Amino acid sequence: MDDVKACSEIFIGKSDNVRVSARNFDFFTAGDGVVRFSPAGSAGKAQYTPENCQPLTWTSKYTSVTFNLSVAKTESIADGEFEAGVDGINQAGLKVGTYFLASSVFPENGVQTTIDIGTLMQYLLDNFKSVDEAVADLSENRYRITSTPTGLVEIKLHFFLHDLSGASAIVEFIDGKMEVTGNPEIPVLTNSSYSESVEHLKLYDGFGGNLAIPGATDSFDRFVRGVYYWKNLPAPENPVQGVNYGFATIQLLTEPPGFAHGGTRWTIVTDIDNQKVYFRTLNNPAITSVDLNMLMAMVKETSYIDILRTDLVGDISEMFVRNVKTASP
View 1 (tube, one colour):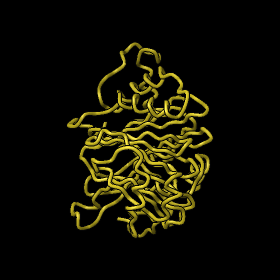
View 2: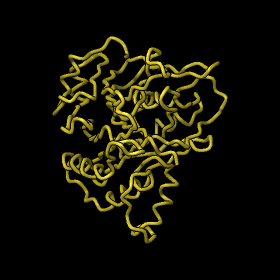
View 3: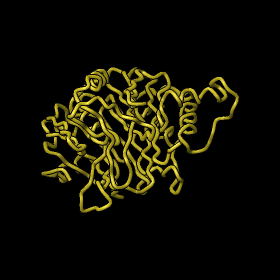
View 4: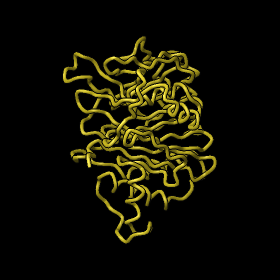
C-alpha cells in the first residue's frame, strides 16, 4: 500500500451542539504552508490544467479560512508553486478536509473544463454552504477533476466534509467513479478507501474480530486506533471541551518525525459551530487559534500567515490585518 503521505481525521459529533473535526497533516518533508483568509468576491481558478483543456474559474460566494501546503510545480522552484488545500472552513459552516489517497482514479468524463484535486477544496468552500450542495455540484459533471502533478509528488486526495446541520460526507474517486459515503457511522478517515478501512476494522476486538488494537502507523492501523478511541470518547458538554477532546484524541494518531509514512507536521482542530480553528505544528507545540467571524469583521482582502512561524500562540486573528497580500503567492 502506498501510504507514505499520511493524514488522519476523527470527527467528534456526539453532541447536538458540539461538532469538532480533529485532524493531523502528515508529510514526508517539512513543506512550506500558509493559513489563508479569502474574502467573498475573490477570483478562483484551477491551478493545473491538462493539455487541450480549460481551467474551471469562479468568483467566491463565501469567505473562508484555509490551511494550504505550498508544493513546487516542477523540480525547479523557478517554475512556481501550487497551493494545495489541506483543511478549511467557510462562513456558512461548511468544513472540508483533504487526505492523501494514492489509489484514487479520477473520472474520465470527456469534459474539457477541469479542476485539479489540490484546488478543489478551495472551490467547494468558495461556492457552497452545505455538504448536500457541495456533493450535488460534484455530481453534475460540469467539470472534470484531475490529480495535481508536482515536482515532489502527484497529489491524489479524498475528502471529509461537514456542515452546521450536522451532515457529513466522505468523497472519494475509486476506479474512475466518484463514491460518496453520506453521514458515515464511523467518522474516521485515514489514507485507505473508506470501505476498505471499515472492512479491515472487523478483524479487531470490539468490532467483530479478535486482534488487539494496533499501535503502528500505517493507514489501517491509524484508522482502527482512531475508531477505538472515538468509540470510547464521552460526548463533550460544550465546544471548549470538544476542542480539548479533539486534540487529546488525534494526538493518539500522531506520527513522529522520520517514519516512512511521514511525520505529523500540523494538527488542526475545528470548532465548526463557532467557525474557530485551533492548530499547532511540529516545531511550535503552542496552540494557536483563528476566529473566522472576527476575521470577517477586520479584514477585507486576501491575507496569509506562514504556518511554520514558531512565535505564534493564542488568537492570531488580528495578525491577518498586517499580512494582507495584493496577489496570491
